Image 1 (cartoon, rainbow, N blue to C red):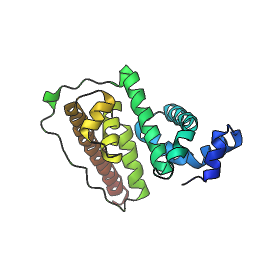
Image 2: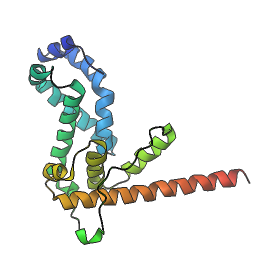
Image 3: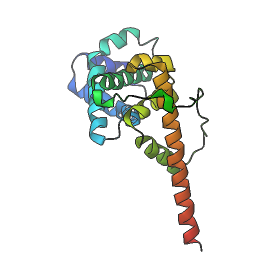
Image 4: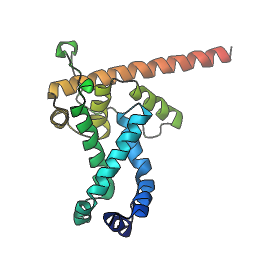
Length: 194
């Protein structure tokens, strides 16, 4: 997905038709970013629209650096910054962690199997959606978006240790949810073929 330079230029001139064209081009990508951080569909759509407005407002600054920064990267950065800003503003997302609960935090990215079936990916997405808001945010920032714990801590105004604790809890909970789903599916398969 790379919109034409002409379309981006037209967006700077407040051309509503160009705004709509860009929105349709960017919708899938932006929704995938918002989906990682929000469970509620209305929150996803609201975040997507706010990110899109920020993109339009900052389009002229992007056009000045378009040769050095890919459009997708710029758009993703705006979306993630928006999500982080929302977490900072909304105190209900700020969970307090007792670090004594965490024995040891994992410092590596989990291995990802490149050939997961669509059904498995949907199960993983559903499991991620069941995580607490802060655990999901830290998990996505670390695993999916590639930020380090120090960066996450700075973005979310938490300590690096708290970021590690959230990641540890997220991974532990995901394992539990996916193992339960696997057991449930095995039980269904066994009862159907007896």
